[in-house]
Length: 407
Image (cartoon, rainbow, N blue to C red):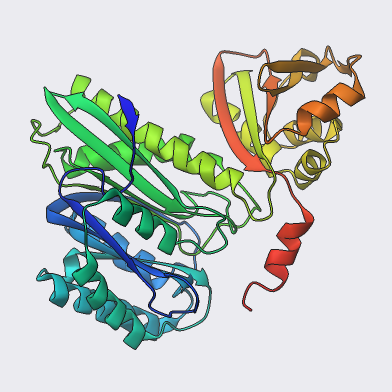
């Protein structure tokens, strides 16, 4: 497996496009389309927020009822969430417009929206945008990057990646794009993310892989503790690589799983690092927990702590905050066995052991925490299980961005 240049157009048979539809933004592209030349198997995971956006319900129905799709239409600026029957109708009208332009069925069109909750989409602009996108479709790397750019809201940069591997003697490619910066707190996944592959794999095995992978990737990130109404993660597999279809576990499935996991891990970390106003990626690593689930809970508790996030912004080695987060996580452990370290690059600093803080240089600790990627390592010494969670620091800019988000 090797990383290659590209995103959603890296795999065979996929095209993408972006356009400025004027949904909310007036100075940038805000609508994207991803299209497969042939019908693709589709798997997805969606928000557990009770207030599910209209496109979430639309996509979930397609994934569950048919497990097939051929296009994805995504807009930024307005979320089409909490919009009642009108929002549902606009999904249908957008899908109908895209389907007509592409010559496919409306139930083969997946939808995604991100932005302000409670505003109605300008459906005439959505329909016109979908039709225009169909005429702009291209299989170039640049087209995929343009799509990744168009779906951003407060993101500071586009998020995309692709991998190439060999399965059954055939070259298989997997590429993905995502957006996510604020309202990030996983309870499935938190963001919009789209992965395309030319692998041949059954709906059952694709959904199985995705549902397992999301637990340790997108479900392990947090920016602000808010689970979105629009969380959507979709994977399309069109089979154009020509490999023997993966219908059961085995070496082919394992290779595909590894590549999909790498895609999801990269995109998840990109979102955590690009949290609204953030200056650094904060990685919480828990080792030696008694169970896998407890390791996840402990790791996540640290990155979700507002006090920890504020300390990371201030480069303050106030390790009591991280220990406190472990202690209120709900997991039972022996505090006398815990060791905690700060790490960045090649520098590792022990800060807590045997129930008490150790002697360390505050100056050196501040210098370590000033880097743009900081690891907090908690060794529980209670077992053999481990987990990693990703978050970011909490800055003044986060408040500024969200104080006037609608304007």
